[in-house]
Image (cartoon, rainbow, N blue to C red; front, side, top):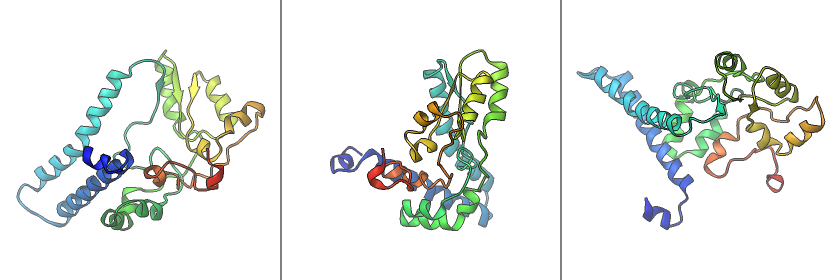
Length: 215
């Protein structure tokens, strides 16, 4: 890895290739498990799932142990079963496929609708779940998930959330917070196309913002 980085590759390149390799392995394992019957199939399926689940679980627990200080950001859990659970809105399969290598890209085109089922966007889509934590916890909490309107922020603060977090709305409009500070009716311009997601491998940005105007 050090030699690869020394040749000019970036950590993002390494991340992309690693994710591509893992996705290819996952697709191959899924094909073998669903298309073939053989002795030890169930054990193979279990071990395959464990190999994917344990690293994320260990990392998640490590984060909790290392970062168990207030405030707590209510992230919504794991996206293992549905990568669109955190985002809601359109699923840019063509852009996802183009951002991957040839083999993985073909897999995304073939199985993308199963891997990334579309979930309709709703303003503050995690709020009903976050309220359950607010009722039970005294510590400061951060609400996130589809926050695009000043009214949503005002409502969250009134319900007892100390902070809110925003992401895609700010990629689309970096000065949105300043605009919200001066207008109670301010709303973000993000259309929830989610085409910003495949750009993580080359510098995350909103594709609707002209290159010369990006923050």
